[in-house]
Image (tube, rainbow, N blue to C red; front, side, top):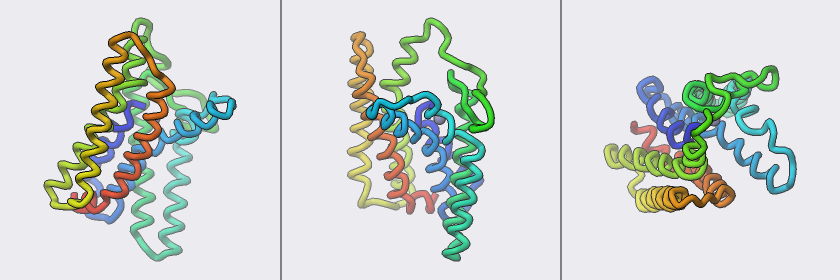
Length: 224
Ligand SMILES: [Zn+2]
């Protein structure tokens, strides 16, 4: 991480480069979100009592993951004779690359970007001392704020382009759900209470929601 919603909006910002190629922008946004889905593996390992070491910011944050994503969708696109799948793969590759670069530059943990070949790389290896509260704020509250802002941004595109109108009610529901979660966990943190497991579970729900809402709103992305 940074917050998954920030990554998703970085993906939206590639609109100027991705042009009109179908599913390319969709891929870039999904690719920007995908690396942090490794938190699902961390959750499974935690629940089953397995080791969580080496699961986050490793295999999904590696340049080899980019190569695999591009290659797999290139093969699918070729077999189906449908360039959209190939575009999707290029978009995923671009999005994952941007995710890795953003993680490298503006986060307090390194990234194993050459996994499985190399170790952790990053400008910052850990949170500086004295920033524990900021760490908790990021882990347990601010993710929800940025999911909400990402959904707001998607909604504003849909209104601008007149697309996905039948989905906007649900989109608004999820947006306010995320803002409400942010408010609740922020207030709890201010009161000195932390709920790492509950907020972690809601984070997983939220990142999956963001992933599927992005796919659902692909008409908007095509119009953008
Ligand atoms: Zn990440």
